[in-house]
Amino acid sequence: MTQEDRIFQDTNRAKDFSFDERVASVFDDMISRSVPFYSEVQRIQSDLIVEFLPEIDGVVCDLGCSTGTTIEHILKHPKCPKTAKFIGFDNSSSMLDKASAKLSPAVAEDRVSLQIADLSDLPVLPASNVVILNWTLQFVRPIGREQLLKSIYDALLPGGVVFLSEKILSDDPSLNRIYIDHYLDFKKSQSGYTDTENQRKREALENVLVPYRLDENYLLLNRAGFTRIDTFFRWFNFACLIAIK
Ligand SMILES: C[S@@+](CC[C@H](N)C(=O)[O-])C[C@H]1O[C@@H](n2cnc3c(N)ncnc32)[C@H](O)[C@@H]1O
Ligand SMILES: O=C(O)C(=O)C[C@]1(C(=O)O)C=C[C@@H](O)C=C1
Image (spheres, rainbow, N blue to C red):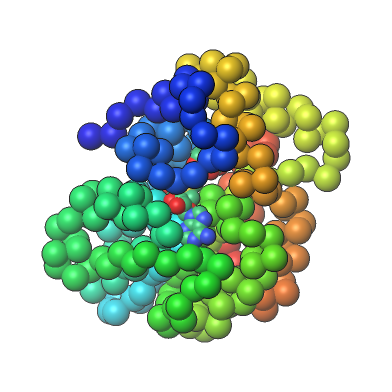
């Protein structure tokens, strides 16, 4: 059972945000209160993902899988083939411990495996039908992003897809300001985070979460080899992209 996220009520919290044990212990609460339409995105994304899974031996890699919520959603989808295999990667062992508990029956049946790995220095991915990067590329150092997307492109089978969800910037500064203000309002109203908590989290995420503009993310995907790209969901400064090989 996930605890309620009150991490930024604590004044002693170290400055830089990190996915440590303390964040992992409240993460499901934190992300569902911090990413607008988080569960709806999981729902519609899994509807899309099953369209790209073959009847037998499909492979899905979730990079930055955190506590395994996305894999759990797909596994529970009525159209998810029973032979599909899932591999979750993350560089936080605390997150993977939570994922392993959440997904334990599927791990026991060998449908899911979890691997500790840094996305800046990823082992070669298996040939995959689907690769997911949900709110994770934004945490990878900008210099490593293109190479990561290239290795995803190489790992995808023909017709395979990458799902990329990110916090984004607008190229119009005044719209950017408005979007961020509405995002802060969202966090206050939907979740009860105070202005102080929001401000502290914002400072902790500075230089840790580095968002790109939507067109910059399209360009990165283009450079990696993808030409068929679409935005299937957007809410102000959050966007979810699909790109087909
Ligand atoms: C915002 S969370 C992702 C949420 C998750 N995909 C979901 O849909 O619930 C970002 C995750 O990426 C992981 N992460 C960040 N930088 C990473 C890196 N360089 N290598 C591997 N994992 C990383 C973090 O540990 C964290 O679990
Ligand atoms: O930008 C913020 O304030 C956020 O809370 C965003 C965000 C994200 O997009 O990953 C940052 C960290 C948490 O993992 C959950 C949400």
